[in-house]
Figure 1 (cartoon, rainbow, N blue to C red):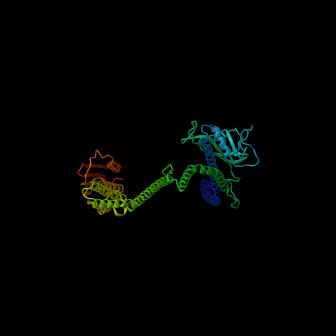
Figure 2 (spheres, helix red, strand yellow):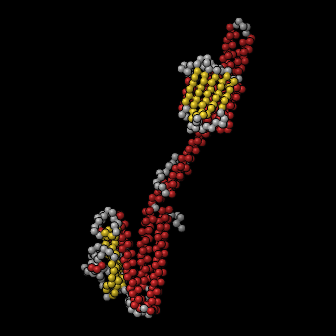
Figure 3 (cartoon, rainbow, N blue to C red):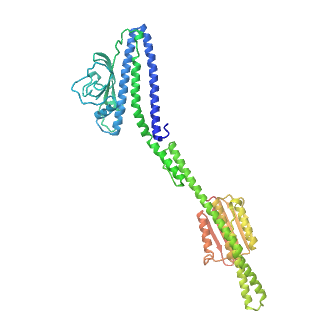
Length: 515
């Protein structure tokens, strides 16, 4: 029924319904208890009329006191709300504003003093200042505005008694109206830490014939009607108060849920950087934290997916370039080397062109070697499928098979390394062997990979020509620089030891668990 309305409205309605159900339940219990008491009193009256009269008088007094308490509490509630909305206002103003919502409508002051005289008698509820000056009454006009309550009724504590009103016997009861108003001025009138701002005065007539012998058939249940009336009054006052309380109390919760809904919509539209401020430690706050954690994980997963896609595209491109170089460009140096070899053999030993053909043949062979090393570097090898040890072994076997170079390996297996470390070790070995083949012309290369004390050590040594690390002239500088940058990012170190005609040794140290 209420599904088309917002959550805030439905929650406010639920507050009202639950509160109303609670009032009705309490009223039912009270009615049941009262009916039982009245029936017991009726049975006792047949045996002892005096006891029945006393019990009936007690019921009247209880009813009067209850109605006075209900009236005081209702007016105190309205006055507290008025004080909270505009702190610092005088007590009389607060009472007047509360009276317009409760006891009766304010009216121009009357010239008469004391209670008005009427032909019919009704229960009277009066709201007065602490000095007994009438602010409002119900029914309207029962007490003139600005008239004075009886002296016995002017009290800052509950009081009760009997009186005559319009010639009829009546019970009266007073209850102080106390509010909590931190912003207001405190006076000497205090009630358990609360400030008394007025008096609720109730007069309830004594049923005719009360205390006298009555026929059982003629007996009624006047207490039930009073309790029902009080319950109806409480229920009527509760409906707007409960509705407003529901609206105000759910405002912050609705804002937090709305932020969650907006964040979810933004994430559904593809904005994975959406975050929601965590506004508490309750269930909604934990939901906000879970939303942020989910968004962070999704963002991280998407970033990993992007990187994986980029890496896959890079591997595919490298493979394509390697195929193109192998199938087209690398064939031309091979053909040229065959022609240079044939030319060298065809020329006489004394010919000047024979020496040039030999030089050209050596240059082409060196070019083919470097081309082969570059093709091996471009050839992708999947670490994820075979593991680091197998990938390094496959790389070395490929160099041996294609370039005819002896590569000895000593690799600890299994290598329990983080993925970034494995990738860095593989690329460093690939770069070091490629540099050795391209620039050192070695006959043999040694590879050692060992893990000890939480660190991985990689050693690549070749017996090639070597070089002066201080005078690379750009031939080795770029490769070494990229190698150092890769290792430094993981908290490792690179050392290169080389000298002309003494080979080259590359030593790398890395934390085994670097991220």
